[in-house]
Length: 311
Ligand code: NAD
Ligand code: AKB
Image 1 (cartoon, rainbow, N blue to C red):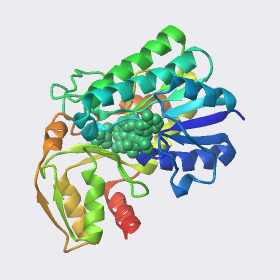
Image 2: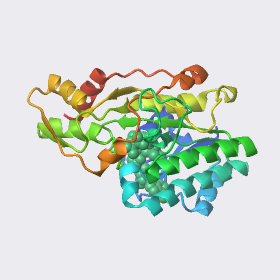
Image 3: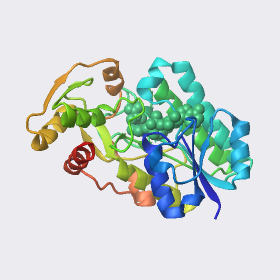
Image 4: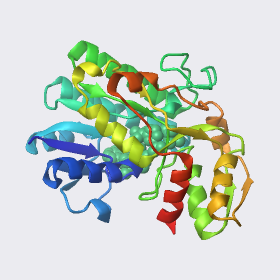
């Protein structure tokens, strides 16, 4: 079997994706890579390579030497971190994508997964059930890089027949690995603090609704879109994907059902400004129609899993 390369494998999504891909395709067929020198213990049983995605020569060497056919490109700076290093974020988020798209254009690999985000939308987009195609004027460097990336993915598909597939992930919730500097990270931090301290100071206002999803659903969606027959993938920029939507107050109320003494207060910081430009909820009917996407984990189950996970 030809091999799969996951780039950015040590991150929040990468760790769980590598584990699932290895279950499906075999440990020896899924190579984990990241700029980090060492990989986390949970993915240590398979091959791990240190790779800087900015280095296209090293990337091509790894791809050719290991007979890689599919690449999952996860390396990026997320919204909050990117605002602190805008130029570097732009370079990493764009150059990394170009390096992988070029490999496919030159027929060194056959399929790419590259994630976009709800950050592609902006304050002029409809906030509720944000449609697949609508006004998109992101105001963060992260959102600008994701929207540009989407346009390039579609361009490489149309011009060079590159089989690139993409999802606009909402905020992802998980306990197996730490989040990487996003605006939606409060929905993870809140659980760590609820379990360990019984209280949490939230950096978003109580009524800030955002689209969210439990990690297992996001991983399933990722594998499902990659497994779908080519002709079912009608959108080559990126698909809207919806899980559930809630705000910090809703989440705190759910947590109090399990941790009755849990207390929350609110001290909004710069991430509030980012969240205010993102959708409250997402219309993912295109993903449902084209490759039969269906979310499965709701808020009660998320709270149960997260509290158990951090206890
Ligand atoms: P993360 O920050 O947790 O992980 C990113 C990984 O990339 C890290 O392990 C980091 O070491 C690695 N990396 C950074 N620079 C690199 C380089 N030059 N070469 C190789 N590796 C490098 O991010 P994540 O949450 O796992 O997100 C993965 C992707 O999914 C990103 O593109 C992100 O924009 C997208 N996404 C994530 C979410 C979410 O909620 N986690 C939501 C929407 C989109
Ligand atoms: C972030 O908050 O930056 C990410 C995302 C929604 O893209 N979680």
